[in-house]
Length: 98
Length: 371
Image 1 (cartoon, each protein chain N blue to C red):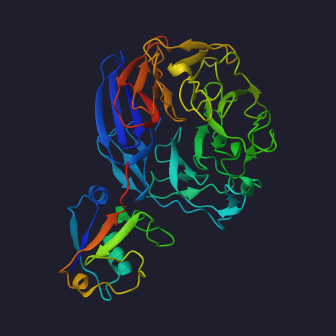
Image 2 (image 1 turned 180 degrees about the horizontal axis):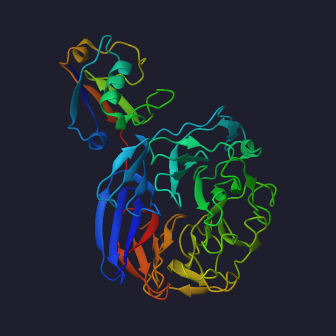
Image 3 (image 1 turned 180 degrees about the vertical axis):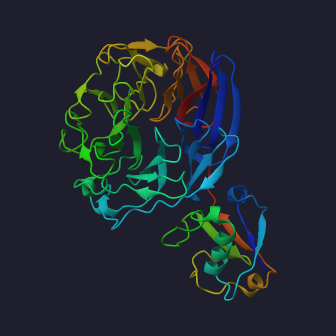
């Protein structure tokens, strides 16, 4: 199971706790994880990545294993610890005031 | 006894203010969608419990929420606003062509006859329609495809389609307004559009009386006088008596004719309301005095209304969608400020009182008059 950690606004929108668990077929990548997340919680479509381009929204970041994976290819393999479910994949709203 | 329900969109959520017909005691519920910007929320005229809300965030994009129980519960519906066909370009701030990019929904206008049909005005400027209660959205691309579309340019606040007026006497006629392209009208249900900006004069654009490029802030219409339009332009209060074919200025004796809101009394089609703002560089009331101005003559002759409003040290703004009127016998007028106050008058503007004082900055105010 893949563990995905969501920011507060998206938890409230989807009606889920901070962390959700998903079945994701290999290879485990940003794209496959987000595809599974959006299939399970359709209300999240468009909130993390653009509907059409599938690009990450500018103020959303992806972290895992103490690394910023935001700028990696969406088709690059995620760390083994994420694929094994020992570490979560963090979807984070970028820091901003207001 | 009749009731009123005020739908308030703010920078940090939506609020619903409810009262009986006396409009003296108010129940405040919310925030709904806490932390999100609610650009606009509006109810269906034919099913008042059917509400639509535009929920948006710089982080997580656009959502549309729908309620079937007057705002007690909500559910997200489709949030995909895909431009129709080849996207094309408009002018960017530096004059270069810039591809149309969807940013947010500024305004939702439910149909006058069908609760499942609702129009959405978006930034970058385009008009969308849903006929399945928000489950899917389709662009009325004849507007953006108008020959002038490639010349449209955003104002400082973005290139938003912020005003949608449905003609109750002619289902094929819709008026819209865009910052900073101007006003447009369709007479064929949205297939083709005509710029309706003749008579407007804007010194801040290279050709002051150009066909497009005017920064229209808001337009209002009385439902029983659908050919008569009133406009708060960037500067100037304008009036058209022929469905926008020609405008003339009715700013008259206003202390300043800059502002954002304009509305019409529910029972008096020649009674108008505006909130004068000092200037385009100082977005607050003149002299720190918050005053609504009322004209009972369709413009030109205006009287200040400040009874109950702060008359010193007030430096708030009233944004374009933040004024509305109810349709009770004694017409109620409502407006919200960037300081988080929502003021109400139950007597056509003679006396005012705050319903709430400390909301987040108010982006929009709509009123429903309920049986």
